[in-house]
Image (cartoon, rainbow, N blue to C red):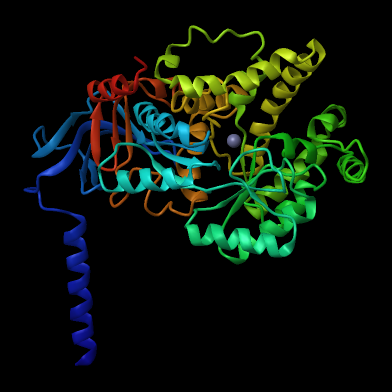
Length: 479
Ligand SMILES: [Zn+2]
């Protein structure tokens, strides 16, 4: 008897759960996108003529379109259009001090208008503002992408970026990671301007003990394999992967380490030419396989690398998006520009050569099974890397490097969701998932540049047709 009662209870729960998931055909949906081709970013399959229904911020259904009229607060004609999950930019910054809070806030609009519905903030000095925006966006008071944030970066004493937490001793590391945990950050970002090798590795372990993922730059006095074995979850940029692909990695690492106690410590850039000259396909294969096995992802940031290596020769005065970048943020662009102009022609030639080499690593990592995350590094100080558009540029560069358009899309959707541990609720187009979507007028699997052909963006279950996006952009345009 008790068994039957239990069974009845269970089937009731199943029935109720089913009702909650599938509203009746009479329901007025928040958004209906009809007759659309849905792009499956996992398999690359195209499903033509679908109807995608959205309510309360979630995708309700994805089904073959069997009629032309739906009761919807926002009806979107998807005829001849392609629907992909909203894009993830896995490396952005909000920073520059309190006088730049309003300027940074405007970038939320730029992300959304370019189809970026989620960003991962890779550390800065505006953490209270980032939390405030997130709260306002969740409450529907502000439009913008979902934000995963590291809060302040961890670095050594006297670190380069303002607002970083300085650590050296084990006690300082525990204290810093505890404070990040209390703050409610989504992961820990480590920077390498001053942090020591032992403190870097110890930070990975202490974060892991508290259930926090770690990503970062890293001191050249540490090998990437050591960091990966400690549990580093992602390596930002390609400098560290590249060093690990040197046949002389051990001796170069030892050289850097022993230089630290001398008046002339060697930094990353001092060693890069030697790393370049000793590149070994076998060493590369070894580190890629280890990263794949230990699930250490990589954020190649190709577009910023290319842009910065061409900074001295490219004139960005005519960039149309500058009109939407606050003058105070544009002023921060001068720092890298000045640095680039001081570089010798030989140094400039080397950095271009290095970037070209970096591109060749990307398809090799993909083939080895390393998770690739698309990140732009947009934000103050990163000259001419415009929020939103630069993520589209990054996807194009990933394809130039040798990824298929599908692999590039994965790097900016499902891979990001998996990395943040939320793939069961977002990152693909399926019932029950977050309604963060991008409607394109052309097929991005045919040409990745088609991610720029935006017809509408759906963010948190609300549709923004191009006219609405244009209005939002106008609101943040410089006077
Ligand atoms: Zn960065």
